[in-house]
Length: 220
Image 1 (cartoon, rainbow, N blue to C red):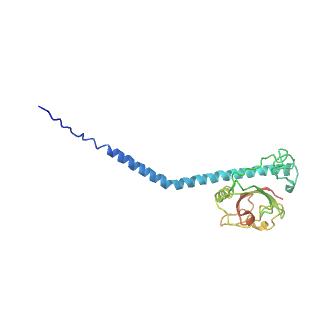
Image 2 (image 1 turned 30 degrees about the horizontal axis):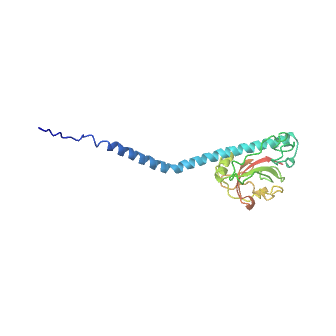
Image 3 (image 1 turned 180 degrees about the vertical axis):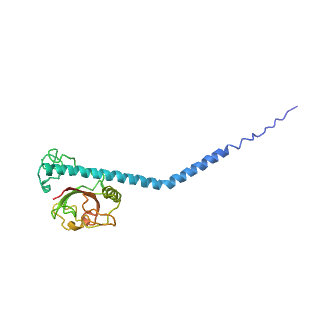
């Protein structure tokens, strides 16, 4: 007699689909969370980069000021007699010479566009400093976010100033006398850079348009 063996389906055979669907649901939730949070993550990294650049800019400015002081105070030279040519590394009156200011030429890595932007050493009268004689400043074009962060460190106001004509920074050979009253002054409610030796301004002059970090190197 032949015995028919009836195969019975295992009652647990369909249970495996449950964990699979659960994992799929979790992955979908994670994907949605990542997509929603990517914007805030990008914003966070940008803000951190701005803070890092602002700190580096202020440190560079302080180093330049130390070099200028070394020549003008210890060497007894007037600020306009200091050679700020980065290629001059030998003369005793050169800012970037070991026997002069003893500081290295500043990096342009923190500039708005490191490919084209350069440091300018401007001779302009500055509101809140000295008399009518022009001051010597170092300026560099920076991004708006970096500008606001520089002011946050300088005057505890993370604000990009409104645009004001501060003269053409590219024209370093002559003083921009209009800057005596324009630079820097109250340009936003709650922000003033008068008598602030380092900060960031927004220049409306077409010759050097945009946000510029500045450090006053010498007062006359």
